[in-house]
Length: 470
Image 1 (cartoon, one colour):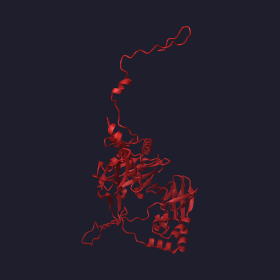
Image 2 (cartoon, helix red, strand yellow):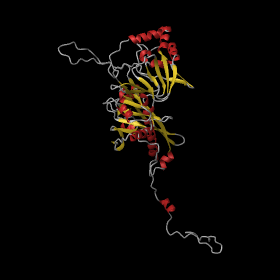
Image 3 (cartoon, one colour):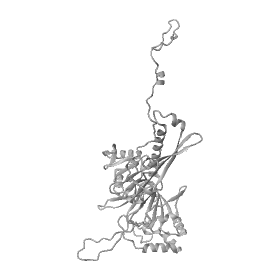
């Protein structure tokens, strides 16, 4: 209500004294009341789906050894490059990733071959190599994406795969007959390609006996029988009649199996004794401090399981299990190819922005995949496989990310988490809290430690769809 206005002056009359209170004011009442309050809230907490879905294996002694059958690796790595301005060159030692040059120990020969590489820039939708043409150079993809296609059974082109930075083609001509290109390479984006002419290789071999001997030995080396996974073959006879001589065989093992040591995330929690003694109602201050500290350690644990260069999933996927999107955004075809690389794909993990990009691609096609239930929560899915968000998977400044496909569990030779329970002063499984004492400032210190790692039991247990445009 507006204050009364004086008729003569038109100005408001001064307000009178406020009415006397007839009951206790709420501000005064709060002094005698216990307020309802929440525990300290934490915005940095995420669902941590990876920690929830990984089967955890007990690791006694702190080390986990993965024994495998012997695998014959034939240089299926990736080549690395350096750039100076617009000029791109291959690192000479990286040429040993080519099968015919693997094990070559002549640095001068590798430097000569690296210097012979010629840089080419291609626009999008340009032909780099055409099927049926003679192979006269080895192609090293330094940047961009290149689609590899071949003739299909009905005359149309058939999509084979996508090559990206670090991949190469035509390397079989280094030690064997050049032959013709069996496929066509066409750029999907702007691409930088280094070409190593076979004529330069032959000229270098003529000048350097070590290189010539290495290439000749590679060409003459018999291929040991292997199965489709690259493992040493087990000879078996079948379909025979009578009493033929059966083949003898044995299962060869890797001589130096990989061992995973448990990693650790640690911090020192400090609480003043006065706080711990006097301010514990209605919530225990030490317990709340510890709860928030454990949340931070678990967040770091999941980050390390994804990104650690020693055991993180992004860095431990086999190169043959890494594929690239056919265009830019993740399409249903890309997801189908990703899950087809292994049996029993149990989970897909992606950054929330990548999941949104997958949703847009599906909606554009008129596809609306049914969600599934995991641990009582409804989540996105593809082909019935849960598509779980994981914000620890990085998104590059260019706006690209990755999608992980996992088969999990020891029984299925999948991906497993590693920990050790029953450690001294354990607070949670494989996480302990140790009292470190009180210093001269009356501050209590607690050492909080979490022990963990992850192992990929066989290469096809983990696959990655790379360079996903989000």
